[in-house]
Length: 244
Image 1 (cartoon, rainbow, N blue to C red):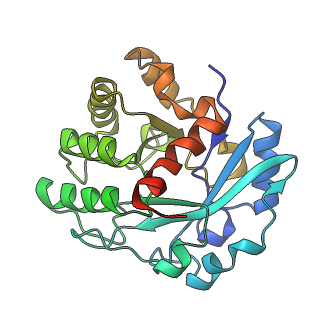
Image 2 (cartoon, rainbow, N blue to C red; image 1 turned 90 degrees about the vertical axis):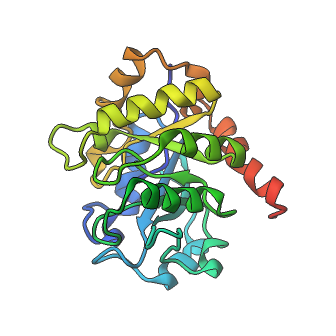
Image 3 (spheres, rainbow, N blue to C red; image 1 turned 180 degrees about the vertical axis):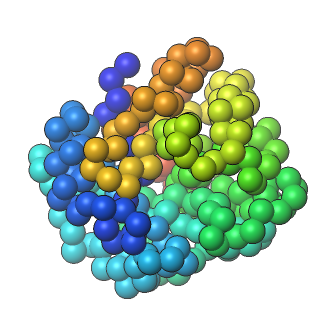
């Protein structure tokens, strides 16, 4: 399978990433990607940018280094009701919206509390992707999450960084295996992303692709194989919600 897109990456604007927009775009081009998503950490992440940064993203060209680039945010889920740290005005002006649990922004709760937080994000009309729903620090009820994602056309992420042995997320492999098995059962498409914070990690799938192969996850449920399929999928949610 040819992987054509990676839509969860960060630049120096996120505060703890190490390359510029142009450097990330050039890396994506050099690796044969057709679409790069740059999704900076939202304001409550220490060192990241404020609302105005996201509100002004319309000024950035959407073609750089010969490839298409979409600009957005990785929102921090702040409580178990699923509130975020970016205002609606900014959400409407960006291209992509990922929602994630980060320990610097929300303390781990019970399985029910954590799941409620993710479900609220899934059901939000402006959320496209749930980022790294795999950290054992936040136990989740995966069947409820997959069911909700199926109902709302929200993508669940297979995050390459989560499976890196040098990473900090706990029990990611077993959690992702469970999630992927349910996605296969419910015929829910997923997205594979690098979560790159440095140019050399753009497009990486050296930890995630072996898991896909091991459990024989169907290629037709991986949206990275087609830019058009990815855009069509995330567009379904807006159509259903009546968002233009």
